[in-house]
Length: 132
Image 1 (tube, rainbow, N blue to C red):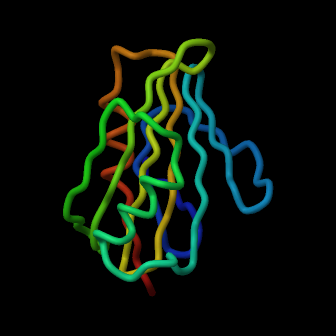
Image 2 (cartoon, one colour):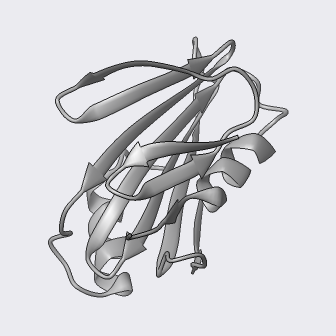
């Protein structure tokens, strides 16, 4: 089901996701075993994809398990994601960014099931933005 995220952004999420709350501009969505945090941004501090990716490398936690950068579609200029595996309650976290020029949407996907990363990557890639 396509769910609105605000400011024209939307995402495809399967299952009974519940919008829990918004605190300091970050919206939390949950379904059993999974959490998604959404934080829309107005303008990134850098203007091109390479500068944005380098800036995120510095801003995000060190030592990601993997990084992905790719061209966008459906109104998104490009996408970038950082995957982290942890011990404890959250087994992995995927920080996903979708950019249109210097405007962006940050999505953070958290799950305890390390055997099912596909849902997080699929959801991140499903983000679109439409301006009416």
